[in-house]
Length: 339
Image (cartoon, rainbow, N blue to C red; front, side, top):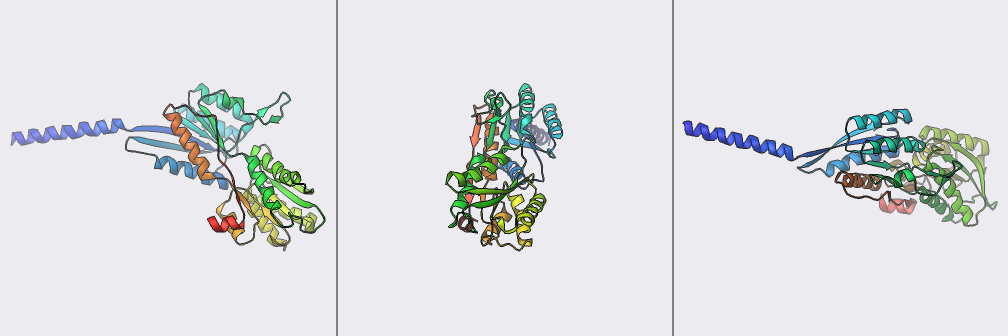
């Protein structure tokens, strides 16, 4: 009996030692993620995919503990979140900046703490001696081997909006007066995506020799309700003169679609409407003929690229400073074939 008890005790000790060894073999990385604003439709898709993709990469020996924070569109709030991430000893930080003008201070803070940083979605810009933005790589990223930016070139998204107008038989000139009269509903004016989408959607037309007339250009701050209000105001003010409605994102375009219907206008017949993001609701409206087109801002591709480079940083691997994910034009034919 004593031999049996001794053997049982020995087995228990072996199992206990194995369990301890197994637990010690599991490496858990702490990942801090701050999103500029949780209520943003596109960034909701993006942040959910970040969590899902990290989860899919877990193994028996590697785990990821994700702390997700809402910047509430307040740079002071987000700065506090980054400071908390540093205090909590995060192994890597993924950051969707509230204000890209604050990039220097935030990057320095994280780099000084020795934590790798992945900036996403809102690209910090380089500036000339007069403080104007220029099309050059941002030194705050280039000078730091553990800092990178993952995003898409917003010039491409704006260009694609314009190209979809050019693909129309009438090139957007519904009333035949020889010019395209448009309204523009912008996102955050400080955001480079908003700036480039605003500029390059129209530039695509003028570069092709199409005369344009800007009737209305207002800031909707990416918000659906604001998009509806601004579009309704423009339609009231300019009526049938409005031929094309450009929106910097789909949330504002969804609002504009509501305003267009309320005004008794019909997309595809007496007005055209374009957005960016390819949100599910927007794609459905395109299939139903209530939006003319959008541009896929690949939340899955970008979030996966961000997570992949974060994992590389956690593994001590060398990285590039910039990672780009292409946009895709989504007109009715593409929507019907791919969604």
